Length: 122
Length: 108
Picture 1 (spheres, rainbow over the protein chains, first blue to last red):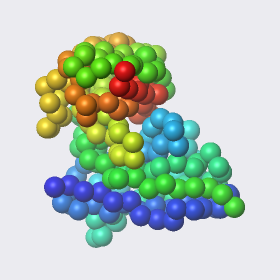
Picture 2: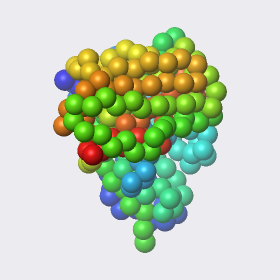
Picture 3: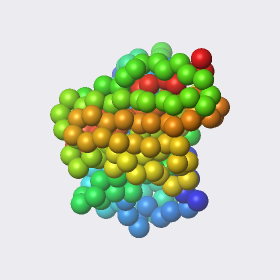
């Protein structure tokens, strides 16, 4: 059974960098697929932040691209999100998820973490 | 960027009734790369439908998806108590992947 678990600080100060890690169990990241981050502000809809291929290629939402870095650590079976220069607008539940597609056949996210609330406040 | 508009915003129905949810795209969704998710309070989204009409693993057959191009529909044939939730559509064929704003299916 594939499981994903987000971890990281629940409170970040404005202008600082938000850092989250997603630990995957039940599947080896190095075996393939894309791994993504999605966020959801309280009471609002979902926004795709970006994804990373198992090889390390990254794809970011243009609206956040200047502030986002996604990386993968296959030795720990983890991938990570860094979002710089955060403001209150970045307060959201952050989800990590698996995208089992590839360049030829895109697929949606099939396994998700439970999500972690990150609040941006001084 | 493809903008997805879902309607209605809220659907008030009784258990046993049929639910029809709409998702309209601002431009054609390539190869029907359109998915539907269900989200309950405090939970992560759950994949229901992909490729516009294929049910994900373990999804009951009362859930069905249809459509192509810019107009897509999620139908729940007979609402069960556990189906009252928020539903999102997502297009994943063009970058950036985008989601609709959601339709809440509530108990009447």
